[in-house]
Length: 87
Image 1 (cartoon, one colour):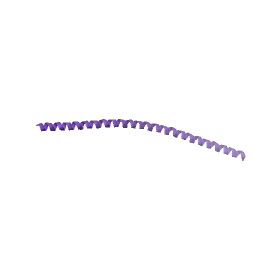
Image 2: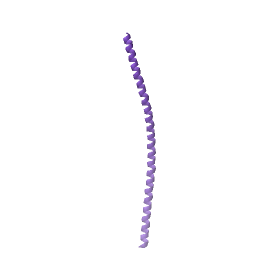
Image 3: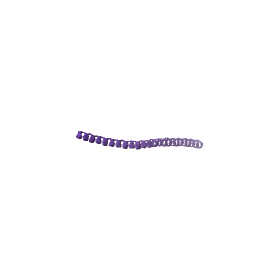
Image 4: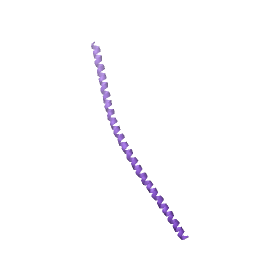
């Protein structure tokens, strides 16, 4: 009877130790999840900022191209007018 009691006590201690280990692992995983969730949020914000920065740079490039096209058209018009005056 004593052996059975000692065996059960030993088994209980072993299970308790395993439970404590699992609780510790869960706590560590929870901390890791929080860190990773925070990092994901930061990266999502960075992606949004970069997308906006891309939208502004693209618009600026398109405006520059439009201005260049207008300048070229005006120059061609002036060249044509000049040629007509000299002809």
